[in-house]
Length: 280
Ligand SMILES: Nc1ncnc2c1ncn2[C@@H]1O[C@H](COP(=O)(O)OP(=O)(O)OP(=O)(O)O)[C@@H](O)[C@H]1O
Ligand SMILES: [Mg+2]
Image 1 (cartoon, helix red, strand yellow):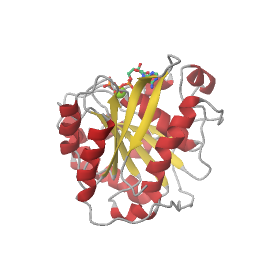
Image 2 (cartoon, protein in one colour):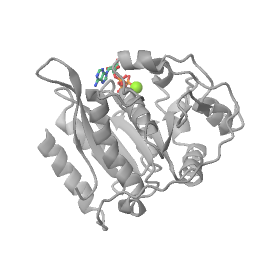
Image 3 (tube, helix red, strand yellow):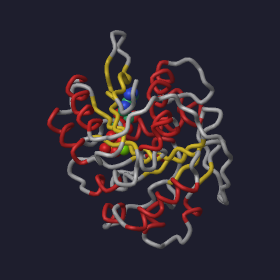
Image 4 (cartoon, helix red, strand yellow):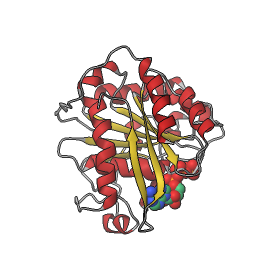
């Protein structure tokens, strides 16, 4: 499988003009925020028990896996390649089909990056048809992206929540609307993401997105994001689906794959491999 993925990526890379070396030099500056609401409380012990990345930095397999994955993403976001990408700090997480592990991946990525010294993360639940970020973090429903996009809430700051992890903020999906996916493709969504990219240039924005096949608006998100992580479920994802997914993404963006739900010899399940844009 990795061979085919690599070939597909090579094609993607050939479409890019500029290639430069890959040593990340993260920008470090504080970013102002005017969040005013009750923070969200993540039960970190419970999340760790459920197999999520631990923010305490314990040496667990999942932490190591995400350290690998995020290293490349952060390098693309802030290193020398960043200037070759439009909104390099905006990362959408998607997959060909449902249930391959998008939310688990987006959430762990956010937790892992939030444990970096000099990075802040905004996790946005844009899988508006199957909003799952809050549920998987054990947090009750709140207003979110949908309320903002429909105009029910005026200010994006009203749906942007602080958490008990200093460097992690969350915009939940809010309630599903009959025009949910159309709203994702709206000019307002575009402007909102653009604003995040510019105002918080030291911040990584992770967007949990709907699947690429069957939901056309997901591809519109690819026009705002500089990077895409495509989650591929080992043994389940079909090659022609993976190819179709890449075609729906923007050829100018950095595309990486994570192969998920790999079962190891000891029976544990996890991630392996990250095949992505960059010179390494
Ligand atoms: N590497 C993993 N280890 C353990 N559990 C996992 C792993 N990846 C995914 N899961 C579990 O598999 C289920 C599906 O994953 P998840 O909800 O992240 O998929 P999804 O692509 O977001 O699905 P949907 O299309 O419904 O949004 C969840 O219960 C999740 O916790
Ligand atoms: Mg999901």
